Image (cartoon, rainbow, N blue to C red; front, top):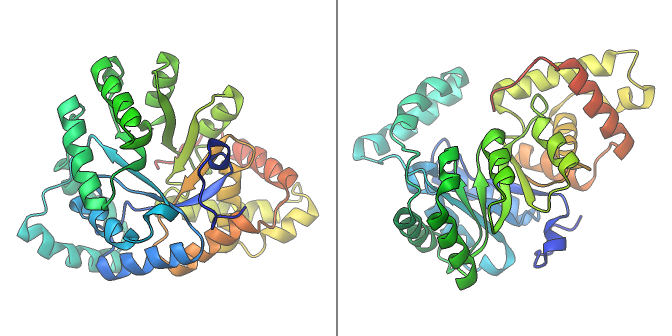
Length: 334
């Protein structure tokens, strides 16, 4: 896989690859660290950047646009509309550095801090007017005249009945402001969209991790001609810890083939990234995976996992089956 070569054709886009998720940019992570992470990803060959109007109080797009200035023609750019950014009042701006420091000291406080921020956003802005206003703001912030992907961000199923909205999206594609439009949501909403055969729908984005591989499995069986992008592949801090425990058990199990046990030891970030990213993308029909990679060591592990996996396709298949068997009754909130 050559991630340095920008993909122009649909066939190129269907090669499984690693993207950069910007959900933490200018939110959980500040300006300096965000720019450093973006630069490291770009230097490592990552060409796909996924953001949204709501990320980072609306500042994620602005910072990404600043970073991509002069690089736009060498990357794929994805954004979303439908959830408005939380209001970044002077007080909230002042509290963000304090919240980041608290998260470093007590990661378990993340959910507590996220609740009031989530309540400041609305998920009901899916009118044609809201679409045009949001895209205009996104293009201005991103310093570009088009985006490669535009997603409806966590829409309710009722949005699928808004023919005028999807007609407007198709018009944006025809005008060249959007290359592909799609839906970024939970699997049930995406399944409903696929069942409705929404005209012009070319891509979907959905959560997928070791403890929730149902979406990837369904996509593999469907044979659908739609680009699939997986987000939240590690399932957050709880998912990382659970994933390590699971792989450690498999590494110690006499039922695991000897050669595979050796590859799973030590069960560090590199081994976890290798299993997670390849289990999601290899022979599943999921073309892109977009984790947040704000730490350099995580970025390096993820790039190495996708470009130089230690596991054969047969071994990844065995691991997928073993993981599914051991977590049949468990669902991880991603």
